[in-house]
Length: 280
Image 1 (cartoon, rainbow, N blue to C red):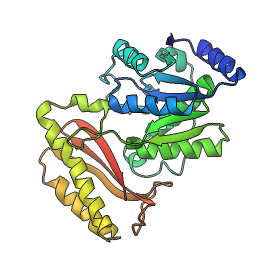
Image 2: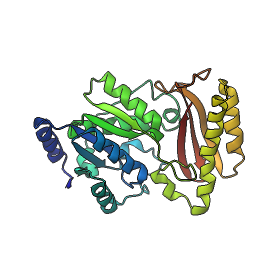
Image 3: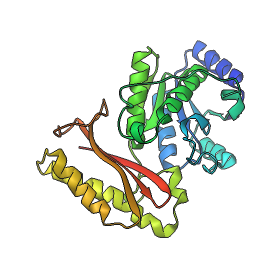
């Protein structure tokens, strides 16, 4: 496995490999890798000849009062994990190589990003679409693997790729969970062990909503009320949003259509922001 820091070297390698007829997969990450990320690497290797994992804590997707400064960074451990899972390249550029002081170009998706985290984290998705566009230009992937935990992000990137005729397939791989049901996230390490059980209540509430739909309910209000009721029982959880949306557009729906709807939540657990979702 090779570690590349230079954007120019990364692009040259990708162009060279594509010239040899190799299929390339990209797994974009911000590091602090966990089993969820590693499952994305495994999925990428099934779909391509060569797998690139990018590790870059993207400053443009953090708001002014968010956790960019304290976001966990463990590059050496991440490189070892990538090698153990068969990645071919780790692309780990420096911040100033991607966003120099005079950087001024951004990519903005304006429809799928309107609701959910787009409402509650202004500018976040502009940062995501911009850095992913840069990574696509440098790594030249045929396929890029993202996690379904960030369902809105994956939907936005699919729309971006379609709108801009980007020759890359966007795949959303299944959520990996703790035994408790808590979705794996790099931000989980902010939580004290005693808080992890509290965090597991998020998935329990989502499953209760999912079970209502499996039982025949198509009422948005009923499902949202049940999830709200269960989350409100925790004194440590503050609800940011609970929404039922169309899986592709990420816009709220008036009635649940099984197989096409998504139940998504975002909460604060003390000072840690957590998101999760289930398909309905």
